[in-house]
Length: 259
Picture 1: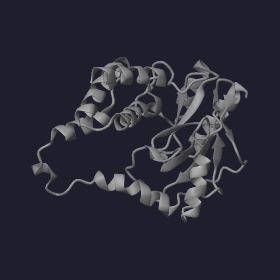
Picture 2: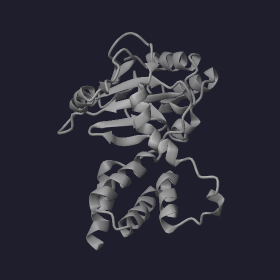
Picture 3: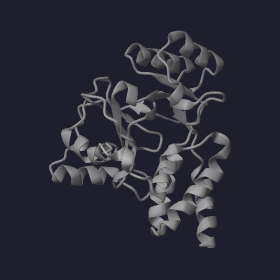
Picture 4: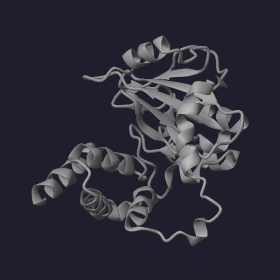
């Protein structure tokens, strides 16, 4: 893949109204000095400047502002999200294939869908076995990771509307975000503050201490280790950039040994 192809793809997305942002070459990590999807832009000169600085930069897009979501199908190792798709289809929940789909470097699949209205939805890790739903940002073609590229499955760029059953499965999270009218009279509990910490995130220089503190709070709720681990992974995925899985596992094992 030529470096110029990445710039051309970025400019085409920007012309379509989709904000883009640069990532380090061969990586999902934002370019040094940038804030990932929070710096996503459609301005032509800004985008050209990024790729003049790093011609082989990988490319990400901001989903929420464009009213897009991505269904992320994992199918490597012992996880096969395509088997989950088959079971969902049997339950009357087919995932439309007549939309723009990309294959990821790990042989996963990204199904792109548009929303008819803008919804305040957080990304959902493990919504179904082997399937995540991305609502904030995603790496896109022609990005390359370890010599393998993101590539479009079909030449069409048409993105279809998300199926209603998928929105319905995501909406409970949306409804929880709607505070009751008397919310101002409700005293925030310790658990409430902990949940705020879970989604708040932190800066790059304090990721380890943030995740260590968060894990301690999660375990003090009395939840089992696997629940705490899943929530720790969720919190890490929201960081820019996330810590490597190896470091997250080290934090988890270290804290578990003390409990």
